[in-house]
Length: 379
Image (cartoon, rainbow, N blue to C red):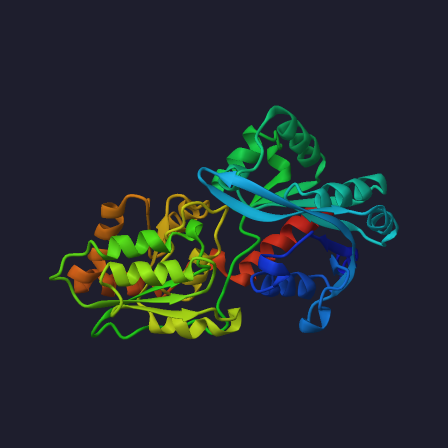
């Protein structure tokens, strides 16, 4: 046993996913806690920590909150800007810690990293993707602040090669401080091992029903499929402001008999949806690094990705059963979908490849990436 086995690692983040739901972070934070038994994860005051008794959640953060939307082309990322209060900053300065793990370039990350530097503690910064994918500011002042922040971090962990290029070229991170490997993934609770490929081919869309996620593009592409192809159905799992409009679109396109809207499911329930599917389709019109593709891969399903997703290159290059296409190009998307219907051999081959997902996207490997970055920062 070494001194590093008793590291007091502190994970600080202003928010966790949609509505502070730990659906995607739960397993990753579980890895973090198991590898560092003295670790804590700081969350906002009032957070329902009893919902996750296995995690070392400490409701110690307080914020000033205001609405902030970011434009990505014609679409908008909606969210809140959370600025730590003076009381929160003081608590960060006083908290016993050896290593602080901060996420991206949020005000919470800036304040907690500054507190760590003032106390001569180590900082690990996590950058998931190139901020341009979600409308992150790329002006001179914003870039200067990010460069100053990131270059003071002892280790910067990025998810993929594209983000590594951004870290080197835009932020000036030296090679010895840069590590590449996913720190966030999604893995269904009970991954399926195979699906019956007889009868209809079952496509699956599992995401929120907002225009940016592109279900309307998928429906339009499905309406373009030749009539002589193998029978197919589409299961839509999710809910959102566009649901009524999308259900109407399915009727207008003559797809009502093939498209089934199932509503929202919890993260613990989606494994059954993947088990019933043959091919997962993620036609987003803009995503920072969508976890939907990783979830499909870990559920052992072929996946059709969007080139407008910051994760597409990462997944395709991993050797997964994945193909990327621009969903705005309706005929191109329809051609990819048709390839699973016109050739039984192609679908069988893709399911065979998908049955062995790339290990680099598993929660265990993600946990190892985090541990390696934290221990490197200490060294």
